[in-house]
Image (cartoon, rainbow, N blue to C red; front, side, top):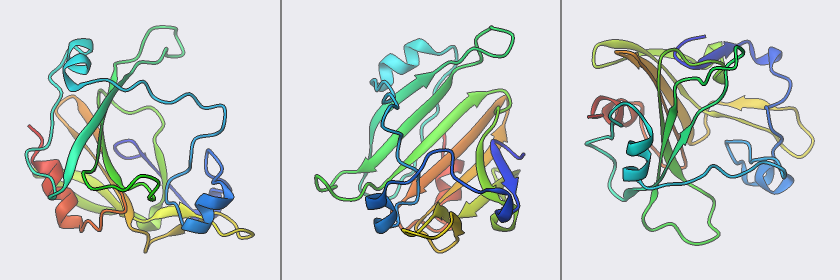
Amino acid sequence: QRFGVLLAHPAAVAKPTQPLSNAAAAEGTPWPEPAAEAVPLPRMSFAEAQRRVPFRIRTPAWLPEGLELRWVHVATEPSASGAETPPTVILSYRPTNAAPGAPSAGLGIEMRRGPQDGGYVIPASAAEEVLVNGRPATYARGAWTHGDRGPVQWDGTADAGMLSWEEGDFTYILRWSRLNLSREDVVRIAESLQ
């Protein structure tokens, strides 16, 4: 595990944690859709989220043109001992010109004080080591996808990916989908957090 990303051999990952629907698979949706019984994340304003956490929420000073903050989510979960874990903040950015019903595109930034428990699974072969403000980070372009009959596979050509790194006491994970971002764009967003 590196910075909230679990590196795995592709054969070791038989299924994503949630299944892709047939419609999503046909579209090549890079991220699993929530299961039918999943409860949507409670969305709140930035100001409300900031009141709920004991640290300053960092936001990017640079984003590609046309992206805006849509919502923020603050999550806390009980640990194995029953105590609450440090809160995780998720910032969700979407294109301002997104048409209703169009395949979703966007960028999410997660931040959590302390090490990340669990994480996102990517094949070890897809992981690249990069630097964010001089610190080691893990970058991967691609997504888990499958066809109607085929097994789940990593598609390194998918317009999606993630970047994960640690800075100070925090673990950060930046994920994007359908934004045509380069590795340099993603690193620039990460380095602009303030």
